[in-house]
Image 1: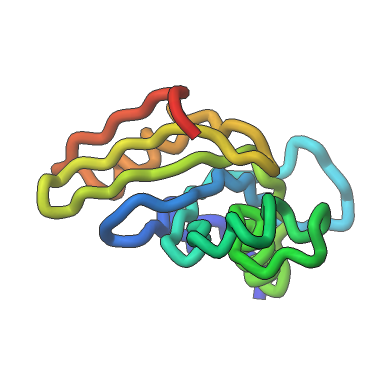
Image 2: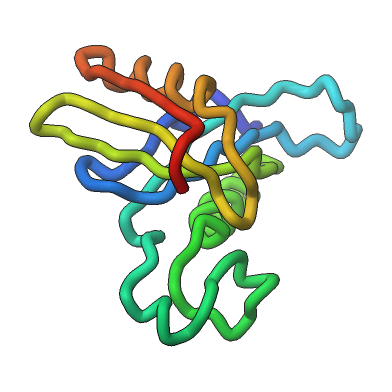
Amino acid sequence: MAADLGQIPDVDIDSDGVFKYVLIRVHLAEPSGDPARECKEIVRGYKWAEYHALELSVGPTRATRAYPEATLPTPADIYDKVSGELQKNGYDCECLGGGRISHQSQDRKIHVYGYSMGYGRAQHSVSTEKIKAKYPDYEVTWADDGY
């Protein structure tokens, strides 16, 4: 069965709270290596990728490739999990950056901000447009400020 980018949701984020996110470009995995092949950007953000107080005792935790001793989830873990699942289904992925999302579902507000230590700052304007499409009745904003 051929891979179809339309089957991949543009946005998958937790329903409430403050959490890390990544912006991922997904390509159809084709042997031709054609740089003009079809692609789309997706937003993924989850609370399980947040740092905890334990981070202070184990030191900085970034991409597990850089700190193999790190056991706490990081934005790299979001990317690794999502890209691994997509690659099994015939897609190639690249991380375009990350940041944080504040999702206040009760107030119908989402704010995208900050940057990823491992991947750099995502283009929040792209992430915000994707989120606005999924949450049309929300106030969705972004800023480059913060971590």
